[in-house]
Length: 219
Image (cartoon, rainbow, N blue to C red; front, side, top):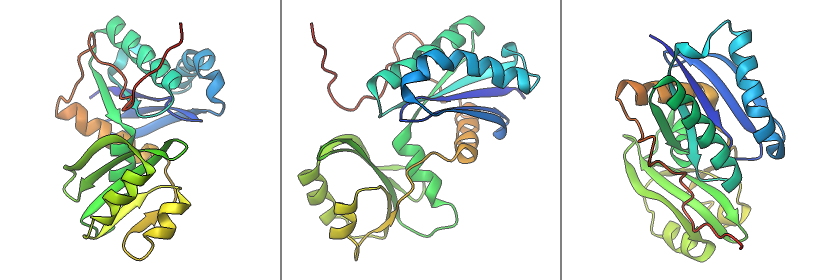
């Protein structure tokens, strides 16, 4: 079996992971999101060199396709696509909401697992998954009022990852919260390997980031 290079430039910190058959070989982080474009290719070269691995040994490239920073998502996907085209290997695109929701299910007993990420003031990205990893509420961009209304209707045992103190104050007696919305690179590598084995690949020519909300440009 071969290697998978995983790219996440969706947030304040970037992460690059090299894994073999779902097992982490090495990883690097980009501490400043403003430096992701300048550092990503340099760090990929360092990651491979330090692991004594050549780029041609990659079996696929995984990228966190969203939601997150517009610029960051474009940087990550553009880099992933470029490598996939050059090596003629498949592209795996994953939702940050899915990973953050499902990684917290290990060793816990809930019926639903979800994630809430801040989009902007009183706006969020949200998704909810069943314990069998099926989507219960698909990834979406939602206002705070709509989020509160939606959570009021959830009556089954649910674990949500979020840092939103307002929601935790309102629903502290009905929903369990996890305050660490960061990707676990070990879980991510295992999930990427499952995607690869299931041939859950994206179309190189038509794939776009999972923005989940309208992108505004200024002329």
